[in-house]
Length: 433
Image (cartoon, rainbow, N blue to C red; front, side, top):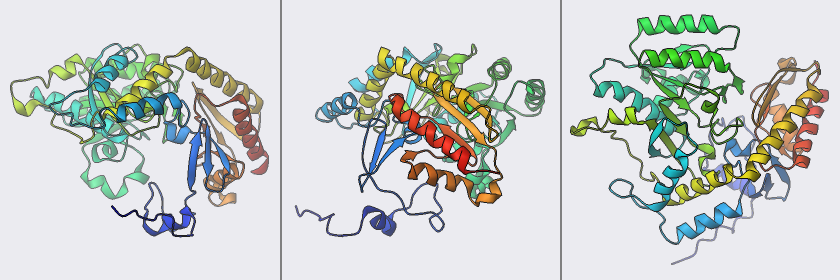
């Protein structure tokens, strides 16, 4: 077989990238060239020139145990030599079975069944389909979904439908399923939110409620009130509205508990998982549900089954990565790391809390965010200016508008955290009103 010469072109990777690649969430006409990353280890990324960057967002909240974690890569490499891929329709395998058993030990106690898919968007897509078909299978005329304002649940059509950030959805809105929305409860508006919820229940045939529990990631780490969410879930349960917790971002220890739903007494009917599920190594999604949800599909009628499938569902390599990830998450060392990072953020918050440019500070677990109170119009695209400042400092953070947030790997060192904090303090001096 002839060997292709990938290295014959003397241009760097960023230049070669421009010829054929179309990147996500990118308007290429106005965006700078893509930075080529050659390797990663721990909480560090390294570009092709050898410059290092602290990964302050764990590469979109995935590599929570650090990049290229040897205990994960070695187990996956061993699995690769034994079973790399097999169809999950009509077959099963050890990594999937063992992963299911491990997940049941950390998921909310009412979860009983797991449905494999490919990513966060398809995990929520399945959650939406489960809620809608749950009622359809029982002859209930319920076709409307309930969601929070400003929520984000992914880029496939059902996930887009329930997402409230129109910048992502504009060209497709005419094709969406029917959705009604309520504001997130913030402690002061809880009664108004509950009032609107009750009104929407009386006016619509609601099948399910999908929500990001306690933290809305794409909405600039917007956090909401646990008591208010608890009341919403209780009312939904009373009206047989299936509660779908989108834990794609919040799951697997980031909030200080295994899942954000663990802060609530009322458990979801369905949980959507991805991102840190596989420790950042391989793509995979999972949607879990209660026995009651599963039973609505369990029938002698073929059409009542959940006919959704992905070619790589329950890929043995991804399952192996996820299983090792759970072993790490539940270990003493990682739990101590989580508490260390939580305390470090709390201490930093005290350092900057009285700064005149700092507002709306918020933290849940290792998720820390605040808003930069400056006149954004003075800086053109403030987000890009902030991003450039951090990258020039060797720190990978992705500000959301004027929101600066940190969601680093659990294994980040204190020295690396200090470098992030110091760079943020430089921002507070650099960007003035």
